[in-house]
Length: 248
Length: 241
Image (cartoon, rainbow over all chains, first blue to last red; front, top):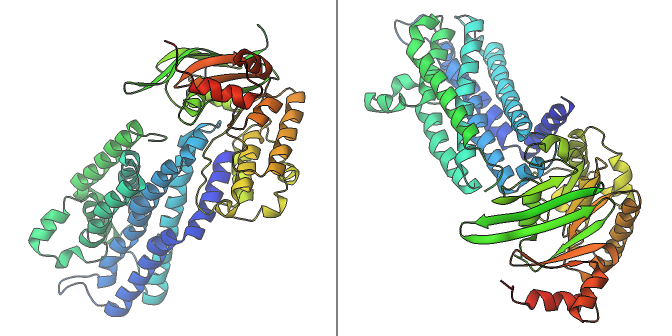
């Protein structure tokens, strides 16, 4: 337990020093919510809507912290730890590298949660944001999305032989998810062809549910996307554990 | 025998078709300093990694402190220290953080600040590991391998990159630890170091054991004047099939 705590503490210090995780995971989503708030204020989402543009976008912006940490932070750090033989060093100590990975997972998760809380507070304080749906449901779906996205990140970390490959795979997965899943550009304004492509991405499904529950819809209406996320999480986690190597 | 700390029998490791280590036998007794010698690529690091269970061996058996490294990993590494030839560290980590982190992994770590002082690194605690000089980093990696007061330590090219004064310092330190009963398995390219430190040595060539014995026995056997000459003679020799 003590080892996990020290590992986590030092990983947090390193993340702050490294800074890109803080920038992409916390500052960008905060900037985006402030921008959206300033642009749309409390404008309604559409003519028939009983919720504002900000209320509609909130859930999507919250997920940026998850993908920045899960699809950049986790795979890039892990594959550089492998390439630099940091993992191998740990393999020759009584720790299990699983402990090291857990510390890493928690560190990124802390960044994501900090990001989401700050996004929530900015929306609330500056633009009077209120969540229509249940906060409890919101948190459950938030965790489900995190597990699913982090499992993809760990899968990339496991199958990449080098930082270079991992960087490439991260870019291929991260940027389409960032721009096409509705996290930054609203899904609603995309042309239909793009929408059906975007639907393949787990994050698009995740944002649909998160948006739905934040606007007060019932979770039952999202049974199939919930199953997609859960299956993605389970499958990717299993493959990433099976293919994990200390060094190449 | 009771006090055999390391027993390796018939260790073989292949990379594809190439045999990196072939049918190697090593026995190291308690309190002994054992040196594994050979040119770059002779299979020294592979041998250490297979012994520790970090790489899978193809055949043979290894016992360290009467434990099988493959099945008793966690217990074993609480009593075994390892210094790798290439000691890499997480980016931007500081000396004191690396010491704190490594200490936290063990049941009974020793006072690392005292160790840093002993090696005159105590004024570098706040420095990033990557900004240390090569010699300082090498000293740090030796310290990290000894932080948990192990019974056996593996040192892969421990003094490479150290200046002569620092090398002597490390030698003195290791001799002191040996007096206290530490068993040391090392590799080195410096024959003066090997002659000074090692009780027994084994020379490897293309993964095979050429000769084993005390440094003086090896010199005598070779008919040369010193260990350096003896070593050069043995590694030039073709492997007898």
